[in-house]
Image (tube, rainbow over all chains, first blue to last red; front, side, top):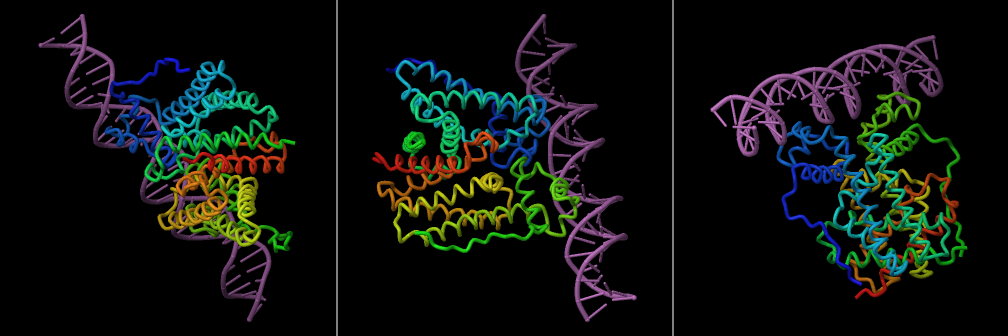
Length: 206
Length: 206
DNA sequence: CATCGAGGTTAGCGCTCGTTAACCTGATGG
DNA sequence: CCATCAGGTTAACGAGCGCTAACCTCGATG
């Protein structure tokens, strides 16, 4: 079962550029893209306002890189999981997809928040790219879900997938990391709920 | 079963003030609070920019009234449903709560979007009020859910409720009213998924 | 050791935005 | 028939924003 996978765990310090992206993601998620000034982003990494322009051509570019990065990582992660687990069976693939999405939702809460909140602030070309990546991610899920629950029509499966994303992406609303009963228990709970939601979606689909 | 309930269905035209609130909600949901100018809101109702100040003391006040109104209506609606259905049994109450939330999510999509997106743009006092209303709404659900699924601990029930809100509030992401298989079918699907999610949350809660 | 580029700094420009001021108008009621 | 007032209008102000210009500093390099 267990296969050795190269995990890119880094030990070196994050670059200034990465610091900026991380803090910008946090601030954008907290107060919205238009609600955060470049001076604030700079201050969050210890430099001041216009210093950011040594690393990014503009504020828009930071948001674009964040959103494209999120969508891309979600999609490539899902494709990798699909390849790794498709010999085992559809159920295992679906569980792996759910697990991957939960990991992302729990570990990168600000990005999850940005992901469906600030998409309209992008240039047309970037927005189209992100939308395309998101669409491919959804379609990948839809196919796997329909494999496990053949009773679902395609539109129903698509709606169900979007709704389960809503369920899994609710982590930012789950109290601030103190009231939670631990990461593992939360991940388990979300996983069970997602499976239960899909299962009930497939029941009595007249 | 069926009890006659006074539904405040209005036949008169909406006041200018209501027009403004409706259009402001739509615009805020589409482009974010900071992304919409007062001139745009005015143009959406046929008057120009500063004319809005005959109806509201400022842009903030529109957002505040929208968010307080949402939270309040959700809470009072839930309390009414609790009273109406608590003789019938816990299951019926939970189904009624789910139905009410789905109605709201399907009929007032922009408000659903605003509701968890722009809360931080409020004055402290308004934000506290909205948070208090939201908390009471959540606690009401938690009690009902624990009545139906006694296996759930209180923290688990609270997490489950937040997650189901995420599921039900996913309606804005469900294609633009053309790809949906009809309102009734969508409501049914969401309802089944919510019940299934709660049911699986309660299973194997070790 | 001189040079040079990466990565900062502060000053300030131009634009947009929320808001106010001053004025207009048409329906209403004594 | 005139006063009033609700509900508009346009002009303009002041603050804040993203971004550029100009300058500084310091470690690496031939």
